[in-house]
Image 1 (tube, each protein chain N blue to C red):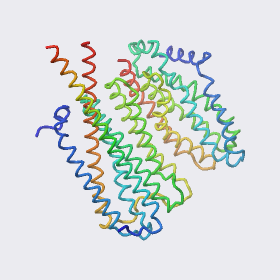
Image 2: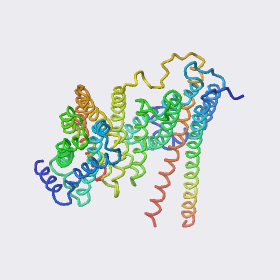
Image 3: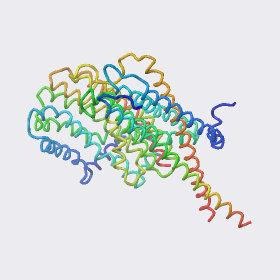
Image 4: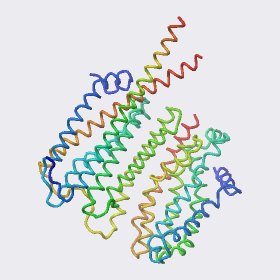
Length: 218
Length: 244
Length: 56
């Protein structure tokens, strides 16, 4: 299983592997929003949590089709399905690889962008925490969406349509946590709820995704 | 009469729906007409909401059916996954557009109902927001059915989507409640009648709700029949091509 | 005949109009799709029956 993880990571980090894409997109968003909304620091500070979280969402979406599509096309997925590792484990590993190359860098880069967007000081820690704990859910839910559409030629847009509504709870609780922290309030409740969703997704969605993969591999 | 599973047999289902569909369509038309005409013409204005209270006869039944349609799709998806009855999968597929339109009606009437009180044509009230999210779930489900060529694969994948989607739809409901609690706009913006309803409103409302339910039944029966016929046509074409 | 809807005539009529319009559109769509499929299936079956009878 470790070998699979290392392999997927190496593939993603290669040129054209999409590693920098998510971060680059995140940065572009942080620049475009003030350009669109106006430079008033107070306004930006108010909407910063939402912008950062939505940026993380969209950046995760960008690389979702990579999770399974490449292996599906060249037949590696069939091999993985018949290997000693359970397919659920394969799904979990691939989601983990996706997170390491997307969600994790985003969570770590977020404070810099939060500075650009004038997020109030108390919000920074919660921002990083919420992204660290919430983006794994985004990767796992995304893996489920990717598994559903792996057989489709141009499933990219469809994956977004399927997955974005599933992202709503994580987005709401994650962003609300940062909003509350930025206002000096206690972010514990939304943080805990969001982490619960992540835990549930990581525990249960591999089974749903593996089920979908088996159907598509028939 | 035998068990309900008899109707998993397409032929038996067609025979049942041959008479059940027109009957429920007729009863639906009657109930909806009665409920709406009564509600529109014969109920008094509410002292707080004025004549906008009349929108309740559209909003509540459609909102109810929007949820029930998804619930029926969930059950039908489970039946398909466990017992592999095609009629069940096709019924779920047929129900989705009906549910989506019900959601649209609920959204539209909900927004319009709130406009005189809120001053805006849309407000991010938790209930309206939840219905908007539900609409997106419907769209995704319908899109997935259309995107996949093989019917059995499509049935399986959309069934799983419906299952997972149901969990997240419930989670979204709570998220939306949490999300709008924090606003300082005070008392609930929800249009849910906190006012106690008396019989003058309740009766036409129940009739309208029954009508919408019967309409859902009629449309799903009709849609499932269409899907069964389409499936048979595909099978015939495939057999013809195999012989050629 | 029309009740006095007062100040809210616009919203109420809009709500009723659009809702009924959507319902009618839905019913039409389901009905027409059903008729089309029924017709296509009948034509298909007729064609196949003729072919089978012709090769007897």
